[in-house]
Structure formats: C-alpha cells, structure tokens
Image 1: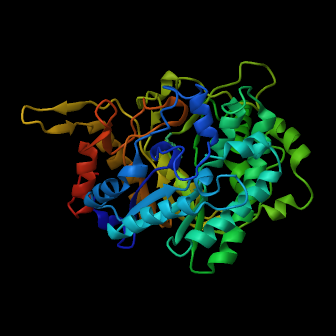
Image 2: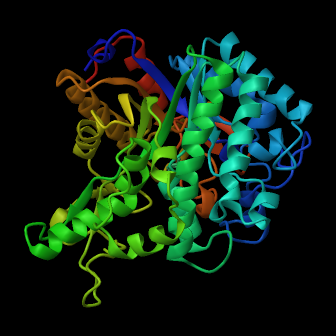
Length: 457
Ligand code: NOJ
C-alpha cells in the first residue's frame, strides 16, 4: 500500500474534539458545558478529568508541530460553544475568539489545514437547563451560534463540519448522562431537533461564508450485523436498528424524509415532534459527508416477545463472529469501513465522502529504556490502521468518492463517560508525568507511510 493509492489530492489528517483535549475549562470567559457539569457530578470516570483534559489549550503549539512532523496535512478540531458564547446565546467572547484564532494560525504555521467541527457534544450547560436539545428552541440557538462563528472565524477556516455524530449524542440523552434518567422520548426529540438545527446552521453559515466554504457534517456510520438476518425477525430488527442509528439521522437531511414504518417505537415519538414542513426544513445538501467508523453494531433478538423493533445490542458479540476486540470490547472488522463507504456513497445528503474518524483504543504501555528513550509498542493499532486504510483504498479503487481520512485521535484524551481509561491516541499522554507526550509506534508507522514509503496492506 502506498499513499498514492489514495490519490494525490487526498487529505491526511488527525481528529480531536474540544472537551476531550482542551482543558482550561473556566479560562477565557468560558462557562461550563454539559460535559464539564457531568464531570463535576461524577458522571465521568475519574470525575473532573475534563477540567485539564490534556491541556491542549496551553500546549497546542507543540502538539500541532508534532502532528505536522508525522506527515499529516490536516487537523480536525472542534469549537467549544461555551468558550465562544459563554451565555449560550448572545454575545461572543473576544477572548474565546482570540484563542481559536491563535490555534488556527498555529495550524497554518505548521502546514496543517484546519477542519473545524462546530459542535462536538459540548452544549453550554445553561442551555441544557433551559431544555437543551430536547426543546425546539435549540434549533434557533444553534443556528445563531453557527452564524456568529461564521462571522468571527470564517476568514481563517475554510472547511467545516456542522455536527459530530448526532446519533451518539442522542444516545447520551437516551442514557440520561445529563439528566440521570434514561428516556427513549428524549432520544427521538434530541435527534429531530439536532437534524433541524444542522440543516438550518449549514444554511446560515453558507449565507455568511459564500460559495467557497466547504461545509459538511458527520455521521457515525454503523453497519448492522444481525444473527439470523434471513428470518422474518432478523430482517425486521435489522431495518429497525438501521433506522434508529443511521437512517433517521441521514435520510431527512438528504431530503428523503423519515423512514416511517420501519421502527414503530420511534415513529410513535416522532409523530409528536415532527411538525408540518419539518421534513422540508431538515433537507440540506452538504459538500461532503463525514463518515465515522469504529465497529459494526451486532444486534441480538430482543428477549421480550413482540419487541422485535427494539433490537438489543449485546454487551459482548456473539461467539460465532469470533472477532478481535479493542480494549473497550469493540469488534474490529476492517471490512465494515468499506461497507459503509459504499453504502453512503450516492446518498443525497452529499456527493463526496471523507472518513472524519477511525481508530481504536488498545492497552498501551509506555516503556522507558536505560537511555531514557520512551516507546509505546502498539502493534495492534498499527495493524488496525493498515487494514482499515486498505479498505478505504479498495473503496476508492471501486470508484467511491472518498476525499480524505482522519485518524482518531492524534493523542490520548478524555473518552467522555469513560474518562482517561481508553487510549485512542497516536501519541501517548503520560497522565502521571505532567501529561508528557510520546509518539507511539503507530504514529511512527504513519510517518513512514505518509513520507511515501510502501507498506504492507
Ligand atoms: C466518536 C466521537 O466523535 C469521539 O469523540 C470519540 O472519542 C470516538 N468516537 C471514540 O469513541
């Protein structure tokens, strides 16, 4: 495998999100986000670990130089809404703007194109207290935020993603991460309001930024694996789960409306929130769809008779699949990546695709030899990237329009509710030693590959 197999204009980048890396949780004029609040209320393993995270807010110059030294040409980052608009709505913080302008300037100095996500799950807590994504007001709050960002940062950023994985974010709401009680109704309401907000925000940004800006949005693309797919139960459950995790997020954006009739429990709530005209308002054609792939979703039969429409994801994959799993128990199945690329190519939400996240957490160990050299031998992660990239190359060879690939993540960081435990980075962060950075073997593998050396596929 050679980097030219991906085309010469292909974007090679690494990704991260504000809350997971920045720290400085109350610097500039920032107010708490829902994740700061969750950390402070022990909904995050380790508690307030997001307060400092990996201190990107102070170390971004070194981090960006390190990313560039590995051969990447792009850095995906997200903006913290409460850092930019501390009140949630209204006035923009000039200190917040200044911070991000410095970050983007440093990206450019290092030859990294910034790819910026407007919203990676860190709603201002004050807006959550006013109902958050479960209220329709969130559509307007978000569109106003998008418009403000476009006016203050549009001159230094050309590539945008409106939202990160709205399906996972709806799932946080379903699980009750911010409200303590689980609720399927909340899941559906949050999903619908996010969809309306994403379309409206993209329109508002386009108005401010004009035709040159590249505006996409991202989706967690889940291939659904069902045991007994050929049975009546299997095919119904597969369609219902696909609706709940994929189609109800992308079909309305693509102008196809909701996939009514596929998942009755979801339909029941949707009917109470979708108003006349919403399916039109939710439609927006994006410049690209950011496809994020980690694992297939394995679904087992629901144990309760009649509940075929609510497929239950097993905690462990059924034995018959015999997969390799990550430190988080996630199934490693590289072919799932080309499956999702082939599947979403041609969907009306966008003509072009970019892999905006792909990566894995493994049990990494830092070793220090007698000379004090620090190494992390993460052979499994290198294998993971090699095999997944081979799938991207094969999709491209078949004509799938994929324009870029972003590894998740450039460095170990705070994995939401799971805190510091899962390590997704190409760069190791030593949490016991002043957050010291050490590029893992997988980072050095990328460095060789990106320098144009042939590697085994
Ligand atoms: C997707 C999310 O966008 C990212 O924030 C998260 O860390 C990775 N998945 C890994 O779970």
